[in-house]
Length: 184
Image (cartoon, rainbow, N blue to C red):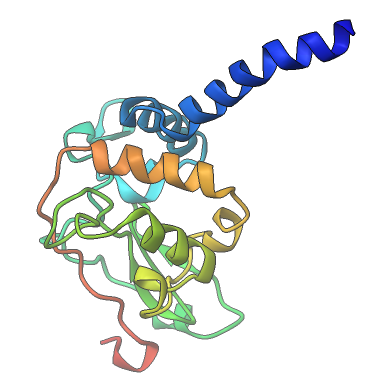
């Protein structure tokens, strides 16, 4: 009898808790997403860097805005385009050269023209699950670990997306990837 009474009393509370979680304020989702982004080290590739006496640091004013559109690539050894050679990255870890060609860290801010401003949570989840830009476009290239991100739950991906959408939009048209045959 006590167990039945407990279930009868607790059932509405559990349902209310589940409903609250399903309708959690965007700020709560964004806070959880920020923690996932920080622990996932997304800033390492997607946030421009500054260099000072203590070495490299993040330029937080351009958080997750991707490879700076106006920044030229440093000289590269084209052997990096050949399978079996070392993969090379720019000193700020925002552009990479390997057998796939050249890839640039994407703008993850909610800018509608140059970032993810027009994306929906469903498009973001599909992109992370398939490794395709916008879920069905060009491949998401190395070193983006989309295949590991794909193992995250839908809720975790929605939290990351909520955090990205909470950032200030930064207009930064990251260069498109370059195929190996087109590297000059």
